[in-house]
Length: 324
Image (cartoon, rainbow, N blue to C red; front, side, top):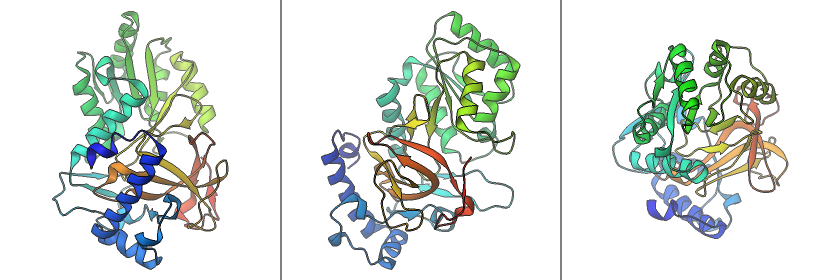
């Protein structure tokens, strides 16, 4: 099944594979089966992917969401404030994750081996269970470039490294959490012509929140680049969407985003309308591939999407919205 999913090339094949994964998870995931039963939805009634129930992402905080009897090889957990309940993703076959992030990156940017990978992820490195750190670690090892590595608080070293690599015209991926990238450009200003600067989001309480447009303007000026790239991923997913600028994200062929009505979670909206973001991630074969996130966004006519904010305090009806 893994080979079939990661070789999807058309909407028709995606649709067929998605219905197959839905049937598999309905039969093998007790949490998801119970949720579908509550909604009186059975695979025999589902002909279109829009009819598939999307599991609220909060279930990853309270239940072990698995569609496999295997032991967890990795347990990825979300960040959270002290004492808060975090999401846990029990991954019984980490090979799905590795194939997803390697093929996903290659789909948009080419072979990771061609890049020097500089990972500026301090808050993720300071805790265990980060799926982002797991991915970055593998990127670093596969890049086979001597300068690839993680940076925690050694920003002066990173400034020096970036400027040397620019002089050598090396192809660089600088992937960092938002507040750390801002810290970096306060240390030095750059003019980078051979570096992809990719933010993974998150001020994590370290800085004042700002709009994406404000943030990207500051980062573009500080790094001397025309565009700031972005990665959209989360603990509960094994795939990532990427933006090469302007906050417009594209999914790899085995992932799809739909928007749900904020007043009726079971209604899928037409394109170009703002709603809650639902994600189909077929790489989640052994957990749940149908996730109703707490993000607010819009699916565009070309099936790209943008993230506009978050539901305030997980209000399932979405009456109170906080746009960040």
